[in-house]
Image (cartoon, rainbow, N blue to C red; front, side, top):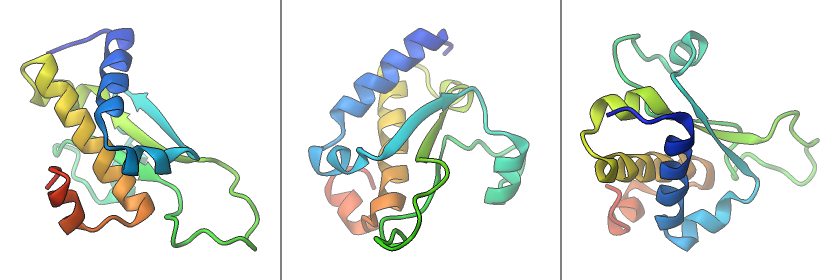
Length: 125
């Protein structure tokens, strides 16, 4: 499956809008961005081998690490969605949107500290 950048952005928007409000509302200070593929540096930092697909990445400090007394971060917390690995694993637009939704939810969970058990309750296990 292959989409042009605008079509993929629309798929990301639709997937994001399906995320439960209890998760989506916690993302007001998090940037969601699309890249074609992760950089080599990202893969190395995550310990991913180059042949294993990385679908998304959270970059920043979790809410538990944020402090009122700490200086503001230089860059906003960011969730990267990697277009090509997602497209490569999906055969339909519906499947792609579901994988994007799952990826974003799992990355947000890293930010806000949602447990795996709660993700399963929400249907993202």
